[in-house]
Length: 359
Ligand code: ATP
View 1 (cartoon, rainbow, N blue to C red):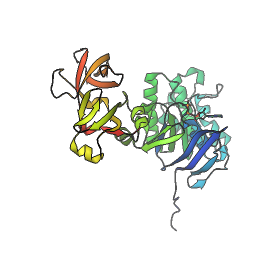
View 2 (view 1 turned 180 degrees about the horizontal axis):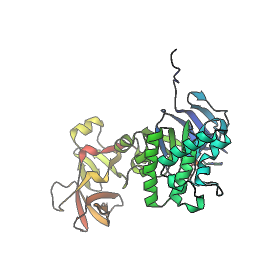
View 3 (view 1 turned 120 degrees about the vertical axis):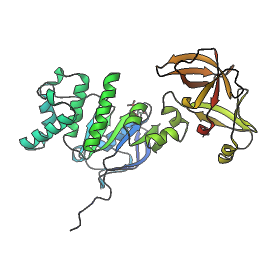
View 4 (view 1 turned 90 degrees about the vertical axis):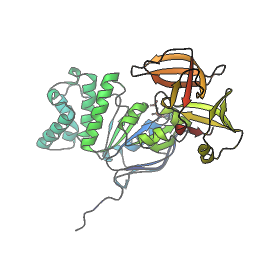
């Protein structure tokens, strides 16, 4: 007999919108997370990330649109029947239970046999390096360990979908990085379809198979971390993803190049053709800080001569925050660590890495 295979494994959102008292929290959210993939929703505060996650979990209802889990329309299915596990920023563990009891509690409530619980708890504890802590109570654990228990408690149920709402934001910087790496490893080993919410673009870049960038309740772009970084769809995405952010320069095109603040960046002919530029066109030119190269001040090859505002040594390199003389357009440049500080800096742009944004 042919084995049944689900044509839509994973998670699908189709035109999901949610209004709160005439405010559109999210509008027309459509995406499909393939079985076992790790997707990250990222965007500034208030962009609607948590609302989307809560709708998937069944903690909030959509005003319109359809939600499918493993091919099944779940719009009217209550949270407990959706086979979804969610981990929040505030990982509330049961304080009177040991780590092992915390991990196994959900299974016990579902009537899973004791032997099976011990097996599953053991496996999750191994993958999250919690084995030596199984007999401890939550107050005897560090914040990072508590968060690993919270992740383990959700994973041990083997849900169809795993939802994470800023799970690392209560941890300090070092712990955050370590736990982030563990989470990535954990996902690689258990392969549960995951949607992860964060406002931290580094988390989005490092964890995601696909990133969904949101702003004001709408999807700005969906893509792999590389695509989002290399080919941002608009200015919002360009400046939100990447640190330091992409430089955005308001320019006017005319014969010879892009003009701004009495300086000119040459425009290769191929680019003028590709972008179908016409004289006196105004738009924004984008270039990442690493695509500007510092030249000696007197170098005739320099495209721009800028005034240095602040110099920040970052260890491996130096960040120069500069501006155009007499104007307030700012520009960030990454220079070698041994850059000789001076009040002016001449820079050449890598013309292969220019972006154009309208509006
Ligand atoms: P943050 O990163 O700050 O948690 P977010 O991206 O998760 O933000 P949401 O919490 O999803 O954003 O909120 C999206 C929008 O919907 C915001 O403008 C918020 O004020 C509004 N909103 C969310 N929940 C409610 C509610 N219960 N009643 C009214 N407005 C709400």
